[in-house]
Image 1 (spheres, rainbow, N blue to C red):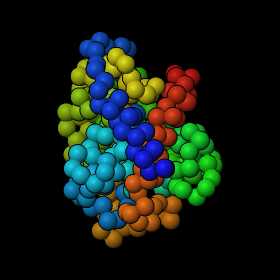
Image 2: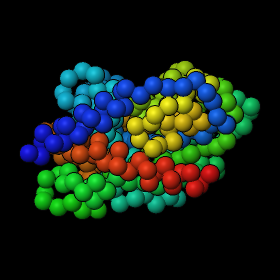
Image 3: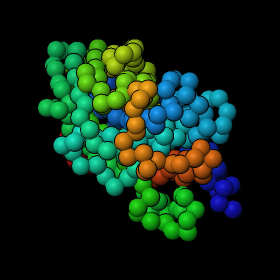
Length: 273
């Protein structure tokens, strides 16, 4: 009975995400948020990355822009934090040094190490009373780390986010946005670690499926994925799933976790503003 239930739950969340309309109104100066990921060594190209998304969404093409597809990439490409910050107990790569710069439309200039606001967060089985991994327990130790860094205020208009120093042994791979957030509308280009945004294009979601800031027009969240260099070894690789065949059940469960944890993440971010 577990698999049909999870499939139904994931499908319901996904349908809600894809059916959300958006308004054109704009709020205050945007907050730009970066969630850094490091992918396992076998992910060496955009095609490899898309295959992970598709597997998470059921094994067929079309995983990009879906909640299960996004969760699949977080499992295959765990988050990584700066060494000065303490990650959560969820699945994550070992902390490392890396750097970003953020330049706003009015000339403001931020760096991650000096100005980034660390936002620790994780998603666990106990949050939704669901045995995700099928081990008979619904505990608070089977979790994904989803920590990130925020920059604010960033003037509305052209914003350039540059990965000036990648995690050692990695290089910029690709980016994604939270499904149905309209954040993807702000993307102008992304190549070689330079991401250009036009934040005037981001819109307010009228009926957000999840209570997350990225559904507001004044928040743009970038999921940045780095690929390992040819000779690189993935940090903390033992915390990642050991086989692709075990992914579907876990992916569907964590898709539900993402929805359940939204309220807590939203409230935490609002309190920091």
